[in-house]
Image 1 (spheres, rainbow, N blue to C red):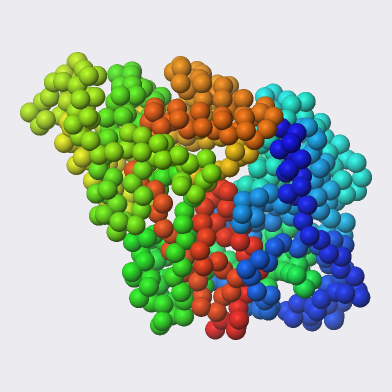
Image 2 (cartoon, rainbow, N blue to C red; image 1 turned 135 degrees about the vertical axis):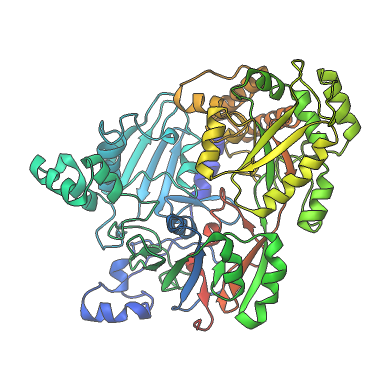
Amino acid sequence: MQKFYNLLVSALAISLITVSPANAASEVPSLLKLVESGALPPLEQRLPLVPATPSFEGKQIGEYGGSIRMLMGKAKDIRQMVVYGYSRLVGYDDKLKLQADILEKIEVEEGRIFTLHLRPGHRWSDGVPFTSEDFRFYWQDKATHPVLAPYGPPKSMMRSDEIPRFKVIDTYTVRYTWKKPNPYFLPALAGPSPLFIYMPAHYMKQFHADYMSKEEMEAKIAAAKKRNWRGLFVDRGRQYKLTNPKLPTLQPWMNTTKPPSERFVFKRNPYFHRVDPKGRQLPYIDEVIISISSSGLVPAKAGSGDADLQARYLRLDNFTFLKAGEEKNNFKVKIWGTGRGAHVALYPNLNAKDPKWRALLQNPDFRRALSVAVNREEINQVVYFGLAIPMANTLLPQSPLYKEEYASAWSQYDPALANQLLDNIGLTEKNSRGIRLFADGSPVEMIVQTAGESTEETDVLALVKDSWHRVGVQIYVKPIQREVFRNRVYSGAALMSTWFGLPNGLPVAGMSPQQMAPTRQDQYQWSQWGRYFETGEGDPPSLPEVQELIRLNDAWALASNEAQQTEIWHKMLAIHAQQVYSIGLISGILQPVVVNKDLRNVPEKAFYNWNPGAFFGIYNMPSFWYQKEAE
C-alpha cells in the first residue's frame, strides 16, 4: 500500500508556474472594463501565486470569448455544470491518473494520513480568499455538527466506524488522519458528484445558528419561509445543485440565474485557478447558457443547431438524423465510446419480498438460464446497427483488468442449455401457453420494472421478452417514474429491473472494487444488502459467494501493493462472471456528441462516462474555445 501511495503522490505532482505582474498574461477581454473601473482586481491579483497548469497535450492555445449553448431536460440538471466544469481538489486527467487541481499538492503517508496544501492566493468567485478556514468550517460546523449531521460525516470519510482526526496546520494546510488506510478518500474527492470537504465559510456563517443570536436566526428562517435553520442552511449551501446563485464557487463558471427558470446563464469565474501554458487564465469561454427542454425533444433541437456542445439525452439511434443536420446547422457529430460495463443490464432482485421468487432468483442456475436464453447478437443488429458488443455486464476490453472469459461467461445464445438448466431446477411443468410452472401451479411470469426514459430500452426488452418466452419464462415490461422505480426495487416489490451495467467499466487495480460487492442501496440486484452495508439496518447477505465479495472488498482496502489489488479484482470479477448477479445485454455503445464546428479542443475520440470521467470534465472543458465567435 505504501508503494501505491508513493506512486500516487508522484502522480499528483504537476507542472507549476508562478504568475507575477512581470510575467502575467494579458487580461480577459470581457473583464477588462471591470478591471479598469476598479470593480475587479487585475489578473495577477486574481490568480493563485501558483496557478494550476493542466496538460495541453493535443490541444491548441485558445482565444477568449463566446458562449456555449447546452440543453437539459430538467432544471435540476444544471448541477451537470459541476460535473462538466470538474474543478476538484484532486481530479482524474484524460489518462485516468489523479492530479492535484484546486490543491497545489497533497502528501499521503501510509495510505492514512492526508496533508492537503492549498494554493496561496486562491480565491472564491466573490474574491474572498480560499483558506483552511473553509475546511474547518465544513468539518466542525457541518460534517460533525449535531444538528446538520446527526449521523456523522459522509460515508466516504469513514473507515468502518472511525471518523478522521482533522487538523488545521496553517492558513493553507489541513490534515486528515485515519488509523487505517483510506483508499476511498481521494477518489471521492475526484468524483463527478464530488465529496465537498470545504464550504465558503465567510458566506455560510450567516445561515448558521452558532454564529448569531436566536432572534436573528428566527428572523432569517421566517424570511426564507423555512421550517428551521437546518433547512435554511442546506438550501443556501448546495454546492452541487447550484440552486443559489449567491453561493461562492470554485468552478469555472458561476450560475447567475435563480430557479425556477427555463434558461440558466453561467458566467465565467474571474478568480478561476487554472491557466493555459502561456499563463492566460481559463476558461476561454465567457459563458455557458443552458436551456431547459423536454428530454425527448433534445435530439431534435440539437439537430436543428440549438446546441453548441451536447451529448446528454442523445443516443446512437439519433446519429443518422443528427448527421443530416451537420452542414446546415454548423455542427459536427463526434462519436465517443462509453465507459459503463453494460449499456443495458437486467437485475434479478435477490432481495425480493416474495419468498418463492426470492428463492428462485437466488438460484444461480435460474439466472444463468435467463442469460443464455437472450440472443444478444439479435439485439445488437436490430437496435444498435451491429456496432455494439454482445457481452456480459463486466469490464470493457479497454480496461487492463479485462478478460475475455468474464465477458463471454454465460452470455452465449444457447436456448437448449437454458431449457436444460430450467428443467434441472425443477421447473418442468408448463401451462397451455408454454409458460413454466412453480410447484404450486403458478406461472413463472414477472414484471420487469424500467424507468421508461428511452424507447431504446423498451425495444431491447421486447426482444428479451420474445427470447425468454421461447424457454417458458414470461415477462411484462412496466415503465414507471424513476423515483417509483427505485422505491419498488428497494422495498423488494420489484422482481427484476433494468438499468445500466457497472458504473465503471474502465477501472485500474488502484480503483475501489466497491461496485462488485453489496455496498450501496442503489445496486438493484441486492439493494437490501447494500443498505445493510451503508446503514447497518436490515439483514446481512446470506449467500456464501456474496459474503466472499464483501470479504474481498474489505481485503482490497488493506492491500499493500498493486499486485494484491489486481488479484482481488480478478477474484471478484470471476465470481460475478459465474454467479450472473446481473444479466448484461449489450456493451460498448457509441455516444454521439454534437459539437459546434468552430469549437476547439473538444477531443475527436474519447470516452463519455460518469465515473471516472465526469463526461466532459476530464477533458478540461475550460480549455474549449471558439476559433471564431459563434453567431
